[in-house]
Each structure stands twice: as structure tokens, then as C-alpha cells.
Amino acid sequence: MSSTSPPAPKRQLRARVLTNTVVVIGGRAIAIGFSAVATSLLARYLGSEELGEFSAVFAYMSLFGWLATFGIESILVRETSRERASAGSIVRTGVALMTILCVATTILALFIAPHAGYRDKLLVLVAIATIDTLIAPLRLPGLVFQVDLQQWYSVGINVIRQALWLGAIIALREYHAPIAYVVGARVAVAAVEALLIWFASRRFVSANSRILWHKAPHFIKESFPIAISTLLGGVYLRIDQVMLHNMVSDRVLGQYAAAVKVSELFETAPSALLFSMAPILSVAAAAQHQFQIYQSRTFRYLNVCAAALCVVITAGAPLIVKWLYGPKFAAAAPLLEILIWSEVSVFFGALVLTLLVARNLQRYLMVPTAAGAISNVLLNLYLIPRYSATGAAIATVASYSIGWMVILLFFPETRPTIYDGWKTALPALLIAAASVWIASLLPFGEVLRVVAGLSTFIVGTLLTGLIHREDVAFAWSAVAGMFARAG
Image (cartoon, rainbow, N blue to C red; front, side):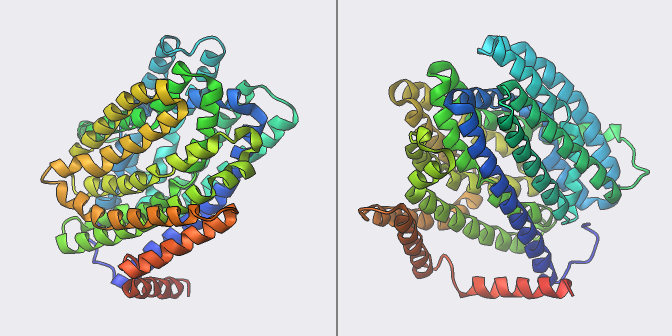
């Protein structure tokens, strides 16, 4: 896509977005299936204590993700969407910068690990996990799939990764391999994924591309707010697991991590749509009216989907945990019932991030992540000693909501965006809460509770107009265009 190219007809654009979204959702549904089975097998194989160690290692490494990527990818997506002819050189410059950053990140993570409670066995696991950081630059060229709305490449590669990870867990379980081999297998699978992205993306960029060192300072300057936002985001996304590891025990962390893994299975849902929308929003930012239409519609769809997810998972948490992990992880069910409500702010925040980057307002990204990080640490310090993992779950929901759904209301440039999101988030949440309450009144049967809760939610969204006739017409237009493109 190029800012100088003529605008595509609305029906054709809808078709492209829907085609990519359907492909991404379909592919990620398959990947989620593989991931769910892998998560189940891994938890049953490792047990709660070693699952806690496994989660603690990767939670620790995620705290350094900001330095490894420095938020460059979001800026490169925007720049390549506007200057598609220079995509190869822009991507190559990003790879060079990220390589330097990843080496520095690896050294820093290994240096700090012993001082953060990762010694002996855990230090060895951290050292293995740092390899994943070193290969991160190989994934960066995959952004051209997003820019060109060719997401089936990244989706296919992700499915391959999840299938390989599932196969690795089955093999490791068969041979009773120790946890170090499990960490090593995860890194090996990530390396295969990175190589596939690297080779598949080469056909979409010019072979004559070069490193634009004169643009490197500009990329660093533009991505700096996103990097700090990622740092702070890593704190409120993973610090709860690191704190449970240090303040309680890995056995408790294992139960908590099991609930987190179920909750996070669905976080790919908003990115399925936003992967297609990000380049379009970057170009449409100059047309305020059209941008507003995209923004309002996407907020409504994501808020309804997030609220529906909360209803289903809250009503069915005991059944889901029992099916995935077995009776040994029964303590994870009430944690999941709390944690799943954080997905509302995750869906909400994913769109806010995309909108702010598209409008060149990424400097504000540090605000929600700082608010989320500070509130999460303070709440965890207060709640974990009193309520253990339940306190960590409550802190997660509260801090996510403060960060992405509240704090940006205090800034004039971002207030209209957040207010626009709240216009559909609030009624969706109220309907979801009422649906869960109605489902809880049923005396028995988790499946019946899920059906009752979801049915109530659907009726509520129709009666309140969160879903209406225009959406059916919009979807039909997009589907018709999609089939027309398919011939």
C-alpha cells in the first residue's frame, strides 16, 4: 500500500480486510488448538512446581523484550505502509538496529539474573532462553506480510511453529526429558519459525535494498516512546509471575500460570483484525471522518467479542481447567474466572495502541503502560502477601483497566479516542456481568451455564444495539467482495 496510490473501492478494501482477517482467525484458531493441547500436555508433564519454574524463566526474559525490539516494528509498519517502494531498505535498517539491541539485551539479562533470584538451575534455564532473544531480528522482515495484507504467510508459519512445539512436547514427555530440554525445545522451535519468516519475506522486498544508517536515528527517536511503553508493559504483564516466584512459591505460580495460559490463548483475536487494519489506519489517519468510522466500528466489534469471551470463560472455567489440566490444577479455575476479565482491557488497549501509532501519537503510549506498571507492582505488593495468587489476579485486572481504559482520559489529544471506546465497552461489560450472574443461578451443569450465559449476552447485545442490521449489511458486503476476489 502506498499513500500515493489511488484509494481502493470500499467493497474491495472490505474484502481484503475480511479475507486477511478470516485467514488470520482461521489460522490462529488452528494454532490455538495446537497451543491448547500443548499447554495441557506441558502442565500435566511438568506438574505445578516445574511449570512455575518454566513460566518464571520466560516471564523474566519478557521483561527485557523492550530493549530487544525497542518498539521498532510498529514504526516500520507505518513507514513501509507509506513508502512501500523503500520497504526493503527500511526493513534491513530495522534488522541491523535490532541485532545490536538483542546482543546487548542478552548480556544484560544474564548479568542481572543472579541478582533477581535466578541462580543455579534457573540461571542455566535463563541462559538457554536468551537464545530466543538473539534470533529475534530474523522475525522482523515478516512485517511486510502485514503491510501487503498477505498475512496468510505469517499465519501459516505460526501454525507450523505450534505444531512443532506440540510434537516436541510429546517427544519430551515420551522420553521423560528434564525441564532444561523443554526450554531448549521451545527455543529451537522459535528458531525454525524465525528462519521460515526470514526466507518467506525475501520475495516481497527488493534485492537491491541497503541499510539506511542516516534514517536509523529517526527510527530510534520515533520508537523510543514505544520501547519505554513495552518496558512498562512487560512489567505489568509479567511482573506478577516474577513476584509470585520470589514471594510465594513456584508451586503456587504453576497454578497461576496455568490460568494465565488459558486467558492468553485468546489474546491473538484482536491482533487478527488489527494486523489487517494497521496499514489501512496509517494511511487513513489523514482523512479524519473515515478514520473515525474505522475507529468506532473496530472498538464496537472488539468490545463485544471481549465481553462475550468473559462470559464463556467465567461460566465454564471449572470445566475448561479440568479438561485441560486435570484435577491437580483445580485451584487454577477460580483464578481463571478473575483473570479472563483482563482481556477486555487487552482488546481495548490493542486497538488504542494501533490508533495512536497511526496518528503519530505514540508518545502517549508511555502513559498507560507506566500507570499499569506502577499500579500492578503496588497492588501485587499489597495483595500477594494477603491473598496469594488470587491477589495477583485481582491486581492484573485492575492495573490493565487503569492503564488502557482510564488514564488516557486525562489528556485532551487521547480523550476522544478512549471515550469512543467506552461508549461500547461499558454496555458490553454490563451485559456480560448480568449474563454471568444469570448463568450462576443455575444449580448444576457447566455446559448449561455457558449456553445460558452466552444466550443471554447475545440477546442483550441485540436489544441494546451493540450488534444491529448495519453490521450484517457490512459483513455481507465484505463477504461478497471476498468471494469476488476469489473468482
